[in-house]
Length: 331
Image 1 (cartoon, rainbow, N blue to C red):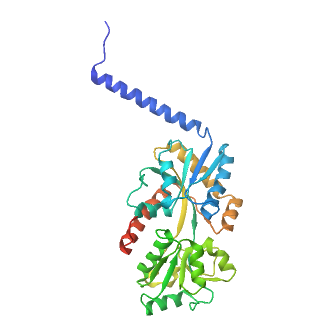
Image 2: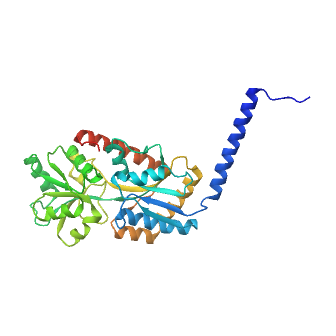
Image 3: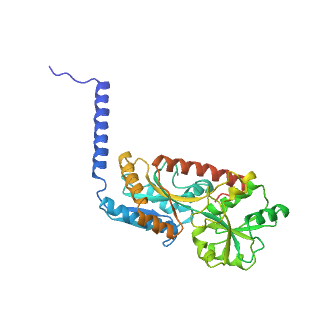
């Protein structure tokens, strides 16, 4: 006489079989990785430091994985276009997103996004950091960072500092600097770096705050004078220029930096994430990679997926607080 499974047992058997199938699918997916070309979506235009970083890593990653790694530039406000495309991609490790401090800014600045920056992505690794610098025109009255601080303290509200755009890491870093120092000054966002430099050299601006790379040619030609960098240590590219925190006092613990890294869609198998991470750590230690990135004023970083995730989350919280305190309108 045949015995039939009771309803609860049938349900359990079905659940177990589905679980086995799911596990088998994940294992097969992991074992096959990579089984097709990879692509990295870069929310920046081609030619900049972020793009160069992504392309340098992509070339080496292609060699390590035995598959083409294609860069797709998707510049847009807040990196929304690239972020949405990756968030909706198959979570198999073949589609990656270049995330950055700008990703964290967007999560805090925009009223709504077509994705959840924390829930829809799994960070793989930090790639690089980019020094932020406060610079003045060569003919400026400010010969040192101490001169700028003294003037701002003695003349509340008169100092003006230019930044490349509204809603950038540079603008928020400038606001953070004012908050930490207790100084009153005007932050003036421009539409890109060249107009800031023009205003600065024309005497229409006191200082500017920008990523080092875009202004390094002006510094090397003595058109601009760097007064301070905002990182937790001096820039290897400007070893004689002090870090802001060296001023002590309320600025003793101050630091701000721009950075980037790689992420994949959430639910990408852990084994795939770790495979990518291992390859990236090896790539970032290659002498030719270090030199290529150093040549464009990029500092090689690296690290674990957990460290990258923690950095993204902490930056979102940090920039949210700056936006609220500075009363910057959400977009």
